[in-house]
View 1 (spheres, rainbow, N blue to C red):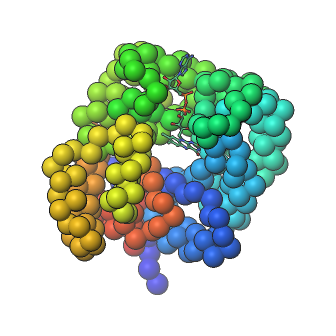
View 2: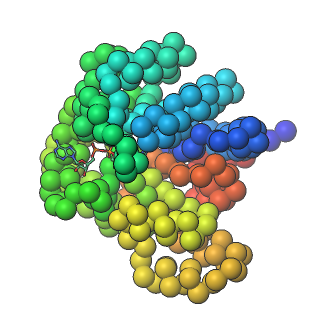
Length: 287
Ligand code: FAD
């Protein structure tokens, strides 16, 4: 029989999924949840499609995780939504004993009408806090390399601080590859009075081309030496995997040495790389 031994002095981990689109994907995710659950994560979070497009699937995925006995946190985006529809979703979660949510503005697909009663995530945070009370754990998004739609870093930071002051309990960052950007962002946020935990979001290199696309879209810097090496591997997946694990492992080591309050992994619904990283870093409960 294997025993799980909690590692002391290491930050807790959480894992992010997207709601699967097919029954096969849903079955596969159950296995991924079981695989990752041996690490005793703080919680599993599930994304929410722009404009509520995955409303039912996010709910079903979160309920499935909760039914397996684990803490689940639905993401909820507000742009294009009414107060009534958000209140309805929150009531559904409350009825399922879910008290943790990742509150976001979201992005409406271009060409979609933007009529809605929320403009920014801070308004959603305030609404959740006012309607659900103090016992909810409300996480929000943070951007160590700044939000791509904000030209001025200082403004983005101030908006982030305002969002925290609206009642957020903590933040999870966008993924990044520069530890200095994260540490600087945290220092700047502290100067603006943010005291809550800011947990780094880590994206393992599941698939270099895909991650590079996300990074280009979201204004995230992939260091040139990493990009050139990755591109040079072409379709040599073993080298991509080995190098990617080293790069992300070293990034996490620096973050852990700097005292991060947790690590949130973007799993893309796969367990292998995240498990390997947690093993190398002695994160979570290790068998
Ligand atoms: P906000 O905090 O509202 O900020 C958005 C922009 O508005 C920023 O540029 C900010 O500087 C600016 N701003 C804020 N307040 C003001 C103000 N008062 N006046 C002027 N400008 C202002 N998207 C999804 O659709 N579904 C998900 O499940 C999802 N999960 C995510 C999880 C994490 C951890 C992260 C980091 C992002 C996630 N996203 C998700 C993406 C997110 O929705 C987008 O990045 C979106 O563009 C911004 O959302 P936000 O909550 O950060 O917005």
